[in-house]
Each structure stands twice: as structure tokens, then as C-alpha cells.
Image 1: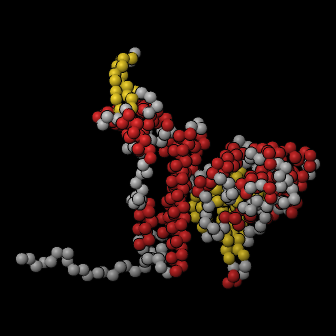
Image 2: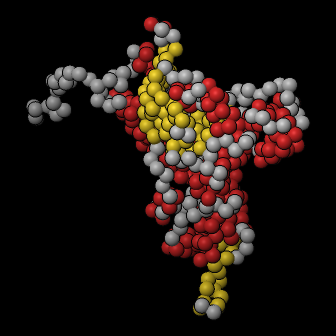
Length: 202
Length: 241
């Protein structure tokens, strides 16, 4: 999530103060992505440095306040960002996928148990997100979309686990599994290996 | 109080080398007001579990209790009463009667239980309206879409304030919005009306509506989710840092 572009999006509606930007960002993302004050002001300073926002100080009852507004360059940058797809060309390094792949090659690991442990955890997370969607969003469309996105993301991982388990079952039936998910009965044979660095010197 | 209890239920089909074990020593409870989802891949025994819980099939061994009544020891009349008055069943392929309208299909269980057609029509129509099908009441099943037929089947299973709803993939033919509406209605019936629901599915999004998710594999219960936790665990500031 680009905080920089989220700030530009909020400012495209009209000038705002820093504290307003923080509150509105959190409200519109359903508090799914909380921001701290420091992040907001650092981002605004960088946007101002790059000519994408302008600021002016006004006096209020609580003291002077700095207001921000988007520039024409900021509008162009926001439009460019909205239309640019994020880079999804290379698969992310997914820890869960790695664990299942590693389990295939660990003789003592029960692959089904590993898959089920992750599946249960993901479904528990989905239960909580479903409850949030029903009880906490107050019908706010932005929040509903954010929660839906998380539910679909988790669901896709559960589906991958289901597919992985089916593939493991087929491989076990075909005899093509590395260890067929069964504990290895005998200890590994000790291997002799040439030293990495030769003993002979110059 | 447990509305449904399965004690060590096993079910096998065929004999000798052709014997297939659909369920092996399954124990499961669903309390009053609880929604339980049963998840598992195709062939894991989900539908068999549901038909046995719904008294549509008998287990090879083990015991099924519905509202405290042991089904195996109950007379045919008691079983028939349980099916008519206590259990609502949503079949995967809907099982609507083609010669009856949507409203007639929904009110049929009440008529079979002795209510006049005129009196049974009122709760039947109410059930259809709750599922957004009030305007389709006079349509026949072949005039309805797959999603509409599924909702008629759900309305029929719930009519007459059944206390135990057993549903086999109840949102399989529904789009995302309609699936959510159906699950919301089932959950409300559990939380506000005290109904118990057991929903069988392979869909994690559907299962995530349940209070508890039970996992089935090769006819055996392998796992279940922990008791529900509050949402605050997902909304901590650390998440973004």
C-alpha cells in the first residue's frame, strides 16, 4: 500500500490538515492499515519536496495549523499511479508455500498434518474477518472491500492447500513422492565428502 | 444443550474386498444456536455424515441423537416426526418437486404435517420473501435460475421454524452476494431463533461463517477450529509496521 499515493488521493478531494489525512486514511481503510502521525508528516514533507503538494499555515483556536493541497503535478502523478498495475510478474516468497515444499523432503514430517495445521489457521483467520465484515464495518463500502480482499486472499491460500494435498495424494499413489509422507525408518548413511578447501597449500 | 450428537458413527457400503468405509468412528456435537461447518474434499464423507444426521440413512455402527432422542432406538413414527418438525434438509441438488410452484414447494412440509394448504401458504410465502423470492412464488422450478432454486430449497428446509438445519453446499449455485445473504440469514436464525445449523462444504469462505469448523478426511474427523476469538487480534497497529 502506497501511503504517498493514498495521501494524494485524499487531497484530490480538497485541502486538508495532517491530522485529518490520518483520520480519513484510517477510516476509509476500515482501520485495517493503521498509520502513525510520524508516517503522515514524513510522507507530506516528501510530497511537498517533490512538488506534488503545497502547504500553508493558518491560525486556528488550537494554534497555527499546516494545511495541504494537491498540485497539478500531484494530480497527474495520482492518475498515473491509479492506472499502473503493481508488479506481480514474479511470485512472492511465500513462507507457507516454502514450509509445505520443505515438508515434502523431511522424512519425519507428515505432510498432511503440516497442510492441515496451516489450513486450520487460515480458516480461523477467515472466521474472524467474516465476523468483522458482519459486525464492525457499519456497511462502509471501502471497509467492506478491504475485508473482502483479505477473505479472498486467505481463501486462495486454502484452495492452494486443498490442491496441494490432492497432488500429494496422487504422487503418493503413483510412488513419485520424495518420502511418500512416511517417516524414514533407518538413519541416513554417513557420507564421505571431499573437503571444501584442499589441505595442500602453496 | 446438544441439538445433534453423533457418537462413534461409522458407515460402510459393500462387503469384503468391495467394502468402502465412508465414515469411521465420527463423533460430533452441534449445540442449540450453534452453526457448525464440516469441511473436507470430495469423497471425505461429508454428505454421508449429513444424511445420517438427517435420519435419511442409518449408520453401520454408532449412535445419533437429535434433541436428545436416540434415532436408532426411536420408532418409525418418532423418526417421521423428527423429519417433519425438527430437521430441515437442504439437498445439494435441491430436490424440488417440478409440478409445484415455488410457494407450494416451500409450504409442502407444513401440509404434510397436517396444516391446510391455505394456512401453510402464509409461512411459505414469508420464507420466500426472506430469501428475496417473493415475486417468484408462482413460478415453477424450471422457470427459476439455479440460484433461485437453491434459495427455494433453503426456504423449504427452514419453514415451520425447524430447530436443526442440515445443508449440503447451500450456496453452491449462488453468486457471492446471494451466498452471503443466505449465510447471514442462517446465522441470524441460529443466533436469534436458536436454530442449530450443520453446513457441509468444501468452500472456506462459506465455512468461515460458522462458529466452529470441523475438518473431515477419509471419513474421519481430523481437526477443528479453536473457539471464536474477537476481531481485535486482527486490528492491532503492529500489523502495519
